[in-house]
Image (cartoon, rainbow, N blue to C red; front, side):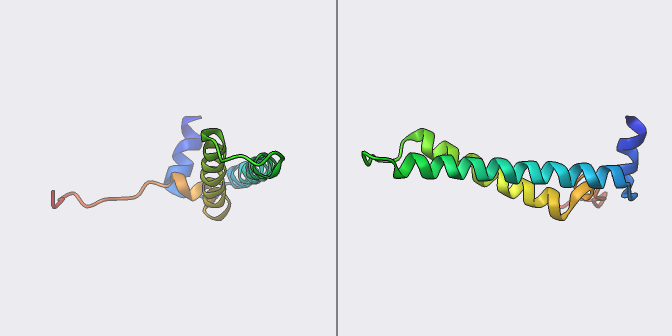
Length: 91
C-alpha cells in the first residue's frame, strides 16, 4: 500500500488508479442523480409545502458529490500528487 501511495504522490501514471478514480466519479454522479430526483419528488408532490431542512441537506449533499465527482473525473489520481511549496514563507 505504501508503494502505491508513493507512486501516486510522485505523479507516475498508473492505469488501475486512473480506472478507480473514474469509476468512483461515475458512482458519485449516480448518487447526485438519485439525490436530485428525490429532491424533485419531495418538492413537487402534493400537497405543496415549504422546503424543509432535509431538502436543503439533500441539495447540499448533491452539490458536494457533484463537485467532488467532477474533480475525480477531470483530475483523477493527480489529486494525490504532492505539491512543493517554497521553504521561505511570507507568514
